Image (tube, one colour):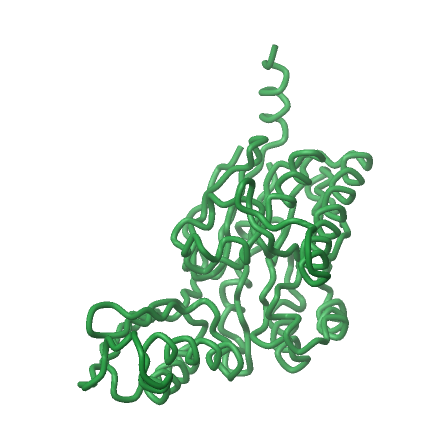
Length: 103
Length: 251
């Protein structure tokens, strides 16, 4: 099961990666978000969060739709005011349809 | 032929109970054993471990697991291990287990492993105590893996699999930022595998990595992190007789 989502929020300070208090600095805000994602419920160390152009891109695979919802909620909260684009899918749970002959 | 099913990084929690079970119930049709390459939980809580235990208990194939870093987060790895063992899972840390499959002895050696990096780009036992402890811990994991694989050879296992959470090679990390490779694995694990010998090395941990790799000694490596394989598990066929014929052909 996959679910792509694009959430867009307009911003005044996206891309600000230099100077100013850390709450206005996109790099530090992303760093703080990653710390929060690791510590809180989603425990998402495998999701990538990167400043790209004038927006922030969140990519990765999460175990369940609930985790995906929690991830989006946390990101939207932590990066409020920034444009965020998501490419986050839910891990597949189907059995494989063929094996690999390793040797 | 031995049919090995494997998956890592399933990160089960209360909301994922029952998600993988339908696929796991098909295992007897396609695999002889199931290997779990760590990060079975999200925070390493006993509650999450019970979800994992329920997901695999009573399966018709043996289940062998190592823990991952997430399974240590709540600092109760012994309790997580106990919950899984109660459900019949062989949980390995610097240990090996031997399974009988169709008259053949199949050995699995396992350790969580740890980071440190890869040749030419790795940390070393130098400087601050914490840095020395970091690398020494990885070395202990690798030593345990090597000793376990050697033990399996002495016990006459025709097929040996090395199971870790952290990666032994950089090949299967392709797709991850190179800057974080030292946190994703260590060459010490590959050196242990190549020194003792193995037919297949399986790991997880690198969600953005790639499935296929190989140690410098020629052991195939597979990153079976669920986000990489995009399934409940993958199945690898290992044919010990073919490997012995290949070895006999080597001059």
